Image (cartoon, rainbow, N blue to C red; front, side):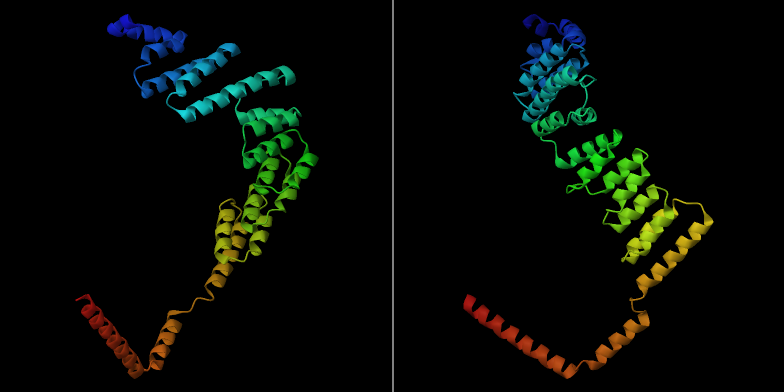
Length: 300
């Protein structure tokens, strides 16, 4: 190593060989060069480990990355430790369940477990990696729909959903089951959301019927404009334009005209007693002057 540090050409050649074969050999060479250099080396080592088809070699590479990160980057250390833990779990899953797990993301690993019916394993992995509840619901909804377990999906929906019912509708539509999508669409409490989901289903008249029940004219008009942009049928466009015109007139019905505003202001000015107003102002001004003189005298 001392010789390599003294000869730049030899050092660069050695670095190239190590990058292509074993990046871990670069760590001793650059150990004294600071966190930035070590971070790049750790990243290179991690990339080399992930590209390895030998699982033992990959695990050993991640362990070396962790040993480097521990000295200057707690966040990267934690992330790499989790990656190593996931790799160990994936190896066990391939042995017990079959299929390809190694190299998958955490979400894909959970999804595959559910697809293969390994719910207990999925639950254990979720708890170990503290998967957020919303993310877990998305993963489980997709897994149940992809395996056509619609009864289990309905049972799951009976729990309090942290993501609402829109994801149920969207995932059912992705799997081509409009009947199930309608079941969850009826549970959506938000009319605008419900109308836009009907638009996704190409059910524009159903969307327009939902809009007709909306209480906020401005929101209803905005939703109708979205519906209008999804059709070229002139009859439908005319109906939507008619609805928009009625809603706009309804929305502005309570706004007074300029003439009405002027009449109200004029009436107010006629009712003002200017003598009383001047008297009140004089009293307030006199009180303010007394306070000021008193405060000024006290400060002297």
